[in-house]
Amino acid sequence: IIPLWRVYDRKRLLTMLGVARISPCIQQSVHRACRRQLNSTAPKSKQPSILEADAGTYGTHVHHKITAFLAVATPLVFITPDHMTAGAFDKAFGVLLSANIAAHSWIGLNYVARDYVPKVSYALLPPARILCAAVGAITFFGMSRVALSSPGGLKGCAKGLWSGKATSEEKKK
Image (cartoon, rainbow, N blue to C red; front, side, top):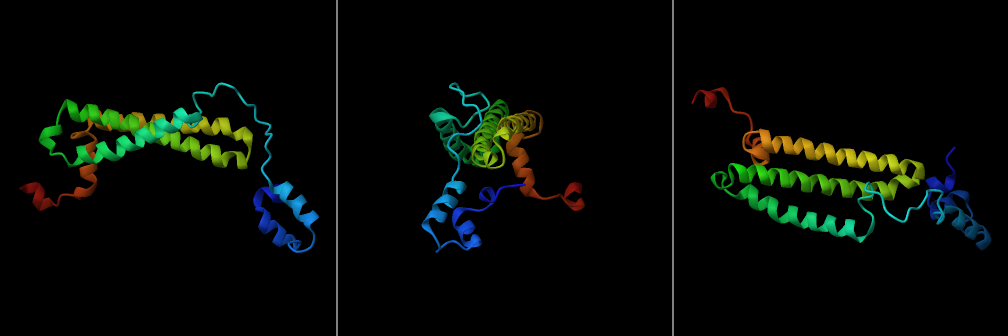
């Protein structure tokens, strides 16, 4: 059974109970019941875990720097002609891009987990952080494999998504 104050916000609960205009005392008690508890049962550690990618200002700064790098470098490399980026540069940039996208998603998913998982249960937060790390690792290894082993790397893969299928007449030429 889920308590009403976990499902509804204060105004909706007051309206639903029909006490919005009745008594300030009842309004205060509903407000106290709906307010998020400040003292959670989750243990607080002084040193954040490595899985807490969103903890502190360091995680936030890294997240913003990665976002800025992705916003600037990715379009530059993708619009650069293929003959200028072919070879080792393409593979190195592909692995760097894979690491940045994986770290960006890992930190971003940790922000989402920190905001929404405690609303269900504080006990689910550590497994959710492990899942976020696993998704980041899978993203890194998958994109790195494409960057290193596919023809044209990540740039060739992205171009292949928009080029469409070759018809049988184009294949004969």
